[in-house]
Length: 194
Image: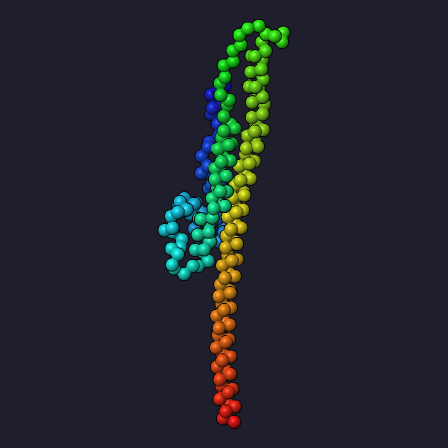
């Protein structure tokens, strides 16, 4: 029976869950690069994405945000933690040897052994419920991380578009001022000529 329990243990490796998070968000973030590749690099590594001196494009801005967002990194760590908790839940209890010396004072000779059996039966009875709960928490953390990816990408795109729009508006205002100044000069010359 112990062999059957040990074979049914759930893996603590979070890589499939991180891959599932990435697959949920890959089609919704607007990037050609895969999220697994972005997340595989440490956040301190600035070699990919944007070097800080080149002009920043919208895709590079989204890439940098998705690689370096500390809240997203926290969400991914929560996915790994939920996987570890699910793995721990599925493990059997540590073996316990319970010995009692002396006379039973409650009138039941086998009380210590009986209490130990109840603990083991409770573990078996609640195992599937605890695994279901751990699986639900893992699924929720995966969806939360994927949601964070999509909202971060959308927020960066909106902010970048606003910044580009404002930059273009400033250029148009500068052109308007120059055109107005030239028009004013021409009107003044025409008025001087009569």
